[in-house]
Image (cartoon, rainbow, N blue to C red; front, side, top):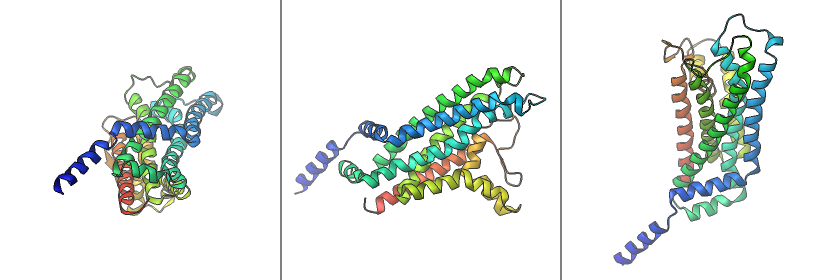
Length: 280
């Protein structure tokens, strides 16, 4: 009996799909969702289109009297970050919600009984695709608008301190938002509820926190919300700036990256726990 059981376990283990096979499977699933291409197209459209609009209207809106790399970068990345964080987060929610609504989550778990591996594969593919799309978008936005700002001596060259980090940070933030949305989708199993939670965490929450009376609670909320931390990731680093300050509400790009990563990991872990404790 013991020999048969051991043989069965070895057979089951050998039949378990490799992680690279799971990555390929999740990539196929992601491609098959119409919402994937709409979402990625939305990131490109808002990120590139918004930057071009701000660059083209620079003269009419008022040219700054002094060069400010942080302001120039803000106009390059602002549209991508504001709209992209919502789109990326909702895409993450839909990747999980679509499997529950179509019932394919059951066949996934039958093929791979260890539920954590498909979730990790889905998060890996989602992060890679969204980050790559965002990187292409933000660098295209920077390249196409640079002549518009250079005309007035306001360009932000890649060699300047903090410029490259801000561009990359903006793209990585969107990738982490997608992972955050995936975790939320695994928790609530509802695309609508997940989308509302993503919208609140990334955009509405930071706006509402800025309206709260000045105090410890409002300061903590402002620092902890993923949207504010993501905004810090899209800013250039300032030499000598504090890592994070509670009462001043300052978040450095490094602190923002840690906070956003923490939120994404927390949501993914909570989603994994939900997957393990309930039926598909």
